[in-house]
Amino acid sequence: MLIESEARTITEADIVNFAGVSGDFLPLHTNEEYARKTPFRRRIAHGMLIQAVATGLCARTGVFEGTLAALTGMTIRWLQPVYPGDTIRLVLEVAKLDPEPSRRRGQVLLLCRIMNQSDKLVAEGDWDTLMLRDLSRAGTRTEGDPS
Image 1 (tube, one colour):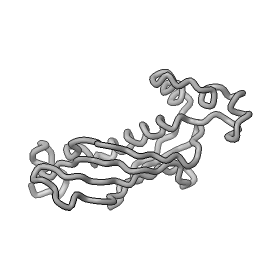
Image 2 (spheres, rainbow, N blue to C red):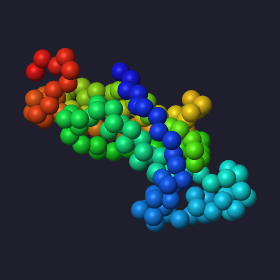
Image 3 (cartoon, rainbow, N blue to C red):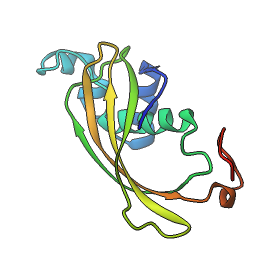
């Protein structure tokens, strides 16, 4: 099963706001003159900003509404820089299901891929989730769900 999000452009405001919230004012993210002297040749977005945006893109798909009990872990590998003005999207794939889920919930491992506007993989990793099995317990239903 593949879950694809809509796309979102990383803006200058995103980078400035994330620097303020996180306290990460490293010049690679905030100083164009400094960044020109690095292998990236210009400023790049914070890796954790990209991960945070990916979780927001996931939330906007609606796939976790009423079904996610907890996000229990993440692994992240940053493969390519994301620059101000780049547009990213999220692709999630169910990689592993709990072989013996409880009556109420089970573990689901999701493969997370973040792609840019050129369909280049910029980050990947795993999201470990604890999902509710009975959607009626969450008080919601998905379209076509008979429960």
